Length: 112
Image (cartoon, rainbow, N blue to C red; front, side):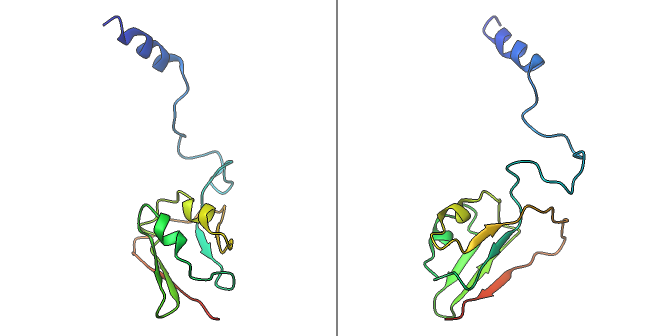
């Protein structure tokens, strides 16, 4: 019991680690907000780095058909694909997107 007292004391008087919902203004993102992911088909060279680093396997690169499949419902919006892309073909938007009940996949065709 004596070892638990500092942890209890710290938890009683510290701020919570999460944000309260609803935010003051849901349309205005807070600093560090991670939003919808966009692919720029003009910059992409189909290297596949984004698909390799994605922990949720939300990105698939099809070299034969020269296309990228992106599954927003699998995506955890960690931003590793954005950081890894050397061509800067992947960006994150800072806008709130409403919930969706239908699982969709986005298909991006890469033209040469």
